[in-house]
Length: 285
Ligand code: PMP
Image (cartoon, rainbow, N blue to C red):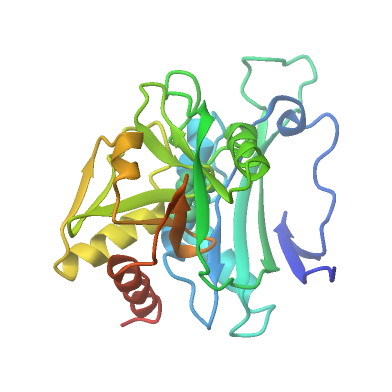
């Protein structure tokens, strides 16, 4: 496998490759204080880059880290980084904060004495939306009382990863994850939508899952195009009767779900509309 071209801004300098920035005494390495965001650049555009750059500051606050840059400065760094690549290169853009440990006597419960920031960009090809298969996970999303579930915090992802792994072991691409009340929350790595009788349905944002930026954008675009989108509590059984299902997330954007459990689904008209609207929006249309 070819190593992707990658640049990281850290402490005022651009470093090539995958620089070792975290040591064994870092608070993040030890106790998990790390947050990130992910945006995409492709075909010369970077849709909602600003929202992703602002969200990383909100995520930092949610885990007790003090953001050291303003959202606007993070956007500037992302744009500066983009200029290191070909104009139409497909990139993953990842701002991140993590905790260091200046005072080695601080242990659990102490805020990290200082916060570090890095902006990393690397070449990551956009995949064709061939469609994914999804199965119910036995793992659940923790609630906001248990974890900072409204943040893009690294400490949440081992839970998402075991749901994804379990799904793959069963021969599926991704997992449908419920919250502690048994309502549908999201997929292991994306938000989820279904269509029933022409109405688009998606779980209401209740703080137990990442109500994504691509989700919000897709809802907005569909509504502006005259399609009804309802955010409500949805059960697993609702999805078993869906006419269409699709997912949203920064990495693959709008992706059709073409199998849910034993049910084979077609990429349908609402999915195609959502994807086209997203592309038009991304290109300024
Ligand atoms: N949920 C999870 C758990 C995710 O990791 C992602 C990807 N960031 C999403 C949802 C989608 O969010 P967004 O559209 O903001 O990328």
